[in-house]
Each structure stands twice: as structure tokens, then as C-alpha cells.
Amino acid sequence: MTKILFVINPISGDIDKDELTEDIIAFCRQNDLQADYYKTTGEEDDRKLKEKIAAISPDIACAVGGDGTVSLVAKAINKTGVALAIIPQGSGNGLSKDLGIPQNFDEALHLLAEHHIMAIDTLDVNGQLSIHLCDVGFNALVVERFCSGDTRGPGAYAWIAMQEFMAYEPKKYTIIAEGKTIFDAEAFMITVTNAKAFGSNAAINPTGVINDGSFEICVLEPFPKSSSLGILYRLYTDSIDSSVYTHRFSCSSATIINHSNEVCQIDGEPEHFDQELKFTVQPKSLKVVLPHPAE
Ligand SMILES: Nc1ncnc2c1ncn2[C@@H]1O[C@H](COP(=O)(O)OP(=O)(O)OP(=O)(O)O)[C@@H](O)[C@H]1O
Image (cartoon, rainbow, N blue to C red; front, top):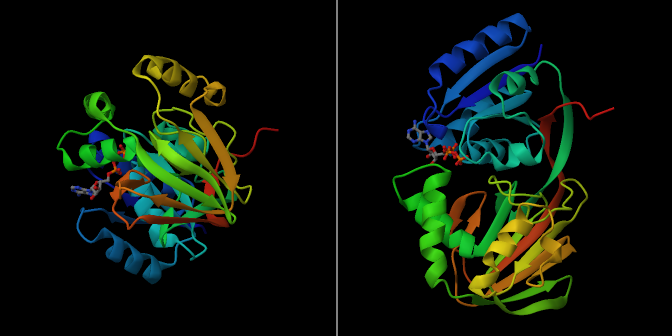
């Protein structure tokens, strides 16, 4: 019998989880799945969840929440062989969209009875796990302001982004990949990912493949304000490579020198590191529960 640990964030996406939990309990009974539950509290969830996983050894740990909950679960099961399932209940749900996991609750729940398990690459960023997307520059600054505010949701993010955009000054970065300096100039932002798009569906890395043993460094160079609508249009039409302000590099390890110590963000959480940011791909290191591939 498959053993599933549901990790439920009661506040994510401003959605009440009590009714959803009842549905999960009923579904597991009907499908002969052995279910256990961990409700996040926002206090020491990292440690408590790791202890729970060690105690019950589930086959699958299922995040019922937003990107923060998915990242919490991925860190707790890292290197344990437990597979990650996602029932998206946040405001962005970036990784689940990139993986083709249904955004509808019932459809995502049904995957637990009928699915395919695939191993995807993750990234090590200065010793921290990234399962989706990290960046330094403009977006990381917006994420930091967003996380320190009290308003959730895409509207609040967009409002902060508009305010910061008017005054934002690009910063200097040097990128060294596989022993060569591949970029040494100012950038508006640099995104490092092996996925395709942000939770907003903005495709910064439209040809990214999540299990090919490499990741992409996506540089957005400084651009005149008059070009911003064109860049946004390209981000939402999978055509960012046609912008003269972007470059993408594929590699399996890289270092970014962040000369002015700008804040980074890893999977939606702001992080402050020293100037040197080291990225290494961890090939096929995370098992994920997915819909069966199309015939
Ligand atoms: N019981 C709780 N009470 C208050 N905060 C909580 C609780 N459980 C988890 N949290 C907080 O919830 C945050 C993670 O939320 P999550 O990212 O899953 O949802 P979201 O922010 O609504 O969605 P998204 O990240 O997709 O925008 C973490 O900051 C965590 O500390």
C-alpha cells in the first residue's frame, strides 16, 4: 500500500484547507492509500517535518500549499528517495505549472492514485537546494520587499514591482562558467534555472529541460524603459530570445560574482550571501509525481 504524507499549509493562497482535507481523507480511503498528515505552523516546520519523515518513511510527500510549502517539502525529502507530489494551493505555484501538474484540486489529487514518477534535476546554490528558479537583481529585490510586507497574492507582487521598477539601477555581475568568463557587465537581473517559467507564466527560459543535466543562466541586460512592454510581451509569448537585451547560457556549474552584494531569491525566498554565488546542477536528484506522459 502506498504511504503518503500530506503536508498541508492552512494559510497558503488564502484558501481554507479544512474541506480539502476531508476530501483528501475520503480519496485515500477509496483508493487504498495509507495517509498521514503534517499541518504547517510557520514555526520550525523544517525540523519538525524532517523528524516526521524519518519516523514514518513515506513513499510520497505531498505538498498542499504554495511554492513555499513545495520548497519546504523538497528540502525535507532531499536525498531520502521519497517522491514529491504537489496539490497546488498557492498564488504562484511555479514548479507545479512547469511540471504540467494539474492546477485543479481534484485532478491533482487523482494523480496520487494514477501517476508516473520522474527524477528531475535540482540546483545547489551555495549549499542550498533550489528546485525551480533563483535570481539576483530586480526580481529578487521585489521578492524581498513582497516577503517582508503583509499583503499576499499576485496583485501585491505586481504593485511592488511597478514601484521598484521606476528607480531601479542595474548592477555589475561577472559570470564564470566551466572556467571561462562568459559575462562581465551590468545586468537588470540574472535568473538561474532548469525550468521554463515563473509562477506568473513569464517564460524566462523557454527551452529549459528539467532533467537534461544542465541549467540555464538567463541574463536580462539594462534596457531603456521604452522597451519594457516589448520585453514583457516576449516573456509571455515564449520569445524572450528575440530580445536584443537577453542572453542565455547553458552549463552544469557556474559562479556569479555579485559585485554589489545584491539580494538573491531561491524559489521565492530572499537570501543574502557573500559576493560569490556558486551553482551546481544535481542531476535527477528529486523524484516527482507527474501525470502519465501523453501517448
Ligand atoms: N500555520 C501557519 N500560520 C502562518 N504562516 C504559516 C503557517 N504555515 C506556513 N506558514 C507560512 O506560509 C509561507 C509559505 O506559504 P506558501 O508559499 O506555501 O503559500 P503562498 O505564499 O500563498 O503561495 P505562493 O508561494 O505560491 O505565492 C511560509 O512563509 C510559512 O512560514
